[in-house]
Amino acid sequence: QPVLTQSSSASASLGSSVKLTCTLSSGHSTFIITWHQQQPGKAPRYLMKLEGSGSYNKGSGVPDRFSGSSSGADRYLTISNLQSEDEADYYCETWDSKTRVFGGGTKLTVL
Amino acid sequence: EMQLVESGGGLVRPGWSLRLTCTTSGFTFVDYATSWFRQAPGKGLEWVGFIRSRTYGGTTEYAASVKGRFTVSRDDAKSIAYLQMSSLKTEDTAVYYCARGFHYTDSSGFYHYIDYWGQGTLVTVSS
Image (cartoon, rainbow over all chains, first blue to last red):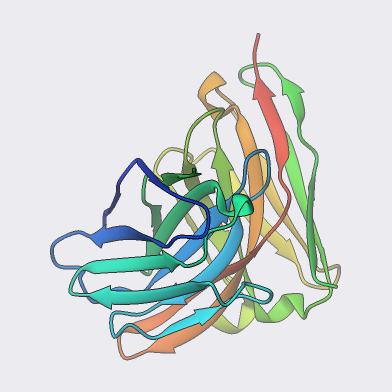
């Protein structure tokens, strides 16, 4: 069963960029993941599906400021031109044929 | 407009049962898997279980923490999914979300990824 590791917190200034990392456990470096955003008090929202090749597919309505990339077992979510509404928890998720797992989430603070 | 709406949450006693409903609209429900997740107060997201679409067998899988107590089912004619919860424990207290799963296949099998979430319903288990 794969395990996902995320930093618990991150911060960046309004208008700047931030790159969040999700790391797959050993033996699972080729796995596809999804990124989800959860704003305070709201339900999660699907952002994108991200493959090991770095190819990603975003959900409907997700701004162009959000992009994904990959390197080895690491999967990245980059947010450019940070806005106040980007302050949220960000979760990565992956799966195998019988289970689904989340990273612990990264709480992003926009300064 | 695509929607998933959970209902059926509430306050129950330990050991009781409760059924949650995920009512969907705006997409072809039969073509998708449905997953259930939960989030305890102040905690992260946790997968509970899922049901594959009929095309992929309509079979179910569950997290170890709920296996044998929770059952996911679906009514394709009504575009509704259910989460039947029994022998509830205080640690089952959480907001429960249903989510749509987009099926895909690759060389190693068939899977789905979550591409749309409901708004959640709160389940509180307390004496």
